[in-house]
Length: 120
View 1 (cartoon, helix red, strand yellow):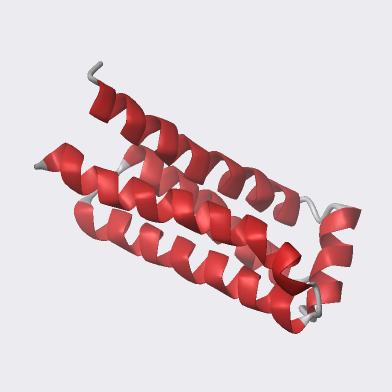
View 2 (view 1 turned 135 degrees about the horizontal axis):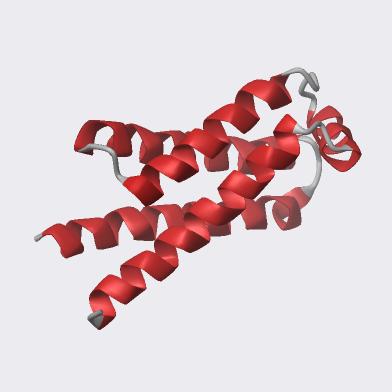
């Protein structure tokens, strides 16, 4: 495997795996996730919707089922991570609370960029 392809897969896994794991945590309604969602001002029922889409989005960028669906998955990750960062800022968590979502956003956007390079 050439270094560019290996780099793409490493970054893509770093974007997809944490997204899917947090999706499973959302779906299983773990106490810590419920407390976090309530702190951010969201109804815990939103966790089921968010968890489902996180898992599907992570799978879509790993499996790449088609150009359009993969693009939608990257867009969904962009909205998820920017929304999480903004929610933490509005909840009074400061920049410390927004760092993790922005790091994962960076992985997702770098994965998308590297997928262009990989396909050209």
